Image (cartoon, rainbow, N blue to C red; front, side):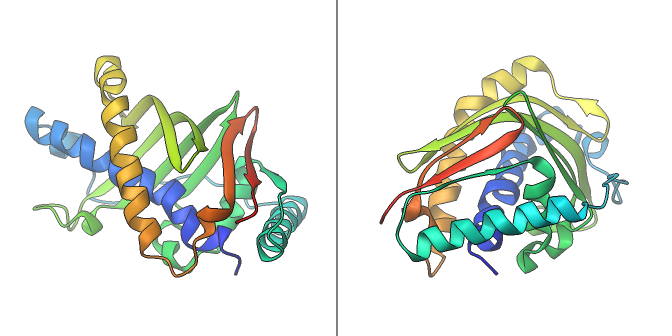
Length: 212
């Protein structure tokens, strides 16, 4: 399996949600509304099976990416939300998210609908709780750091107030980059040494590699 599908998607998608949940968690406990924003079980995230064309495009993009990194060359790949989801579904580390995550990209905004168990956070009362919600954000990556603009967040059918979302952006971006650097240090290969830029453009995630 190529390095983009394994480990790197963990940082992009799962890392985003885990960091968001940490930040949102403080707010939950402060407002004493933990039970209203989490659930005792998963929700039904309606995901359409990828067409053969989507699978082929995702595999082709991954192959081009792997080849560029192996040859230490610059190249650019573009992935739609469904194509990104195909690569995500093949990451063995993310088995618990399989068929529980939908990724949509439109107008340079990524929308991720997720149903995920919270036991990984190791907080009191989390063992049997689930995060069922949707997050919308814009994202770019350059010079070794992410820039995140969180636009809206919904958990268990409840929208987070705009004032919370806008006030959370700076803290979240900082926390995201700290978590990213920590996760990056735990991988044997440094895929990110080969990433020049990554950004959302239109309905695609555009990633450009660079020679190491």
